[in-house]
Length: 374
Ligand SMILES: *Cc1c(COP(=O)(O)O)cnc(C)c1O
Image 1 (cartoon, rainbow, N blue to C red):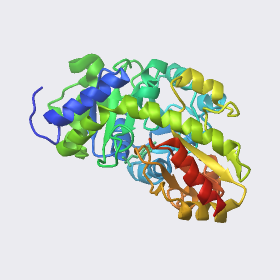
Image 2 (spheres, protein in one colour):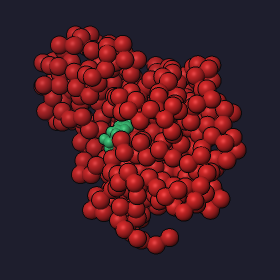
Image 3 (cartoon, rainbow, N blue to C red):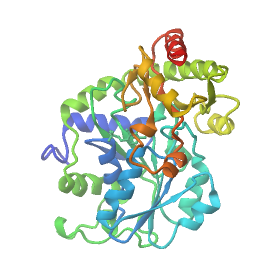
């Protein structure tokens, strides 16, 4: 149980993992080298070649690419569904499905997932729901309280908050019965590289967490570095203050953009006009996050000009920084997707993504105003 070697466990990294677990209301978990590493590591104890996950089409572009390209090389498959379509999720889950995967507030569209509905469908089929809670953070949404089994994070974003760290985290609710249907042999059958240890037998409800650390980190080596964990621990101390300001600013900026006639659409779920307004009030009542997209009447070219003319906004692929960030996804983060995939992910060619920071909201609005004029 002690600190053997820092690829598996390290006191500083564990302090961060325990803090994120506490914020999410989980029972266990671990940190890893990036959000993408967290996704692989979260699924690793559950999967084998030939198995599949059922995933929302509304995911971060890099995740779509990972689930499409990299998983294929592992023999893992992804079945894409409209995560609002309960019947489609139920129909997509088959005998080889080992998880359902979605984002709570989806990057980049700001769509809010009906987590209790998705959890109900997944749990009825005997598979865990894995939720990427990066965009919401546990300050705005705690997926385990809505029925999720596992939560993953890109610690790179709001949890650290200032763009100094690349990191990830996996949080285990400790509430899933891994042995119930014989679907998860990595957790229930003897582990040859641990002298025949059965994780469910040895660790009970903590089987998944111990497998993630003792096998996942040991053998995959996607370890977070302690200095990064230290920065993230400092960042988390101001999470509540930052998230309050992020959502207040996002609301003010979204309202202003919605009333501007150069803008065709604002997707922010905090606006009464959003189809997800009522759902946001239920899933994340403290605010609908601070990431959303706008559609410009001027199309693709106007989007590129807007990005080139902002002064206060930083043009970067990151999100969840204290600074306001802007990106034209179709020509950058989501460029590797087909146009149909781009539309399904909410980033058509005339769409720009904003991550609203904690500056004075009047300054944010003034910058968008002058750049829209340009
Ligand atoms: C950034 C991001 C990831 C990937 O995290 P990295 O730390 O960049 O590997 C995954 N999901 C979401 C929602 C993200 O925003």
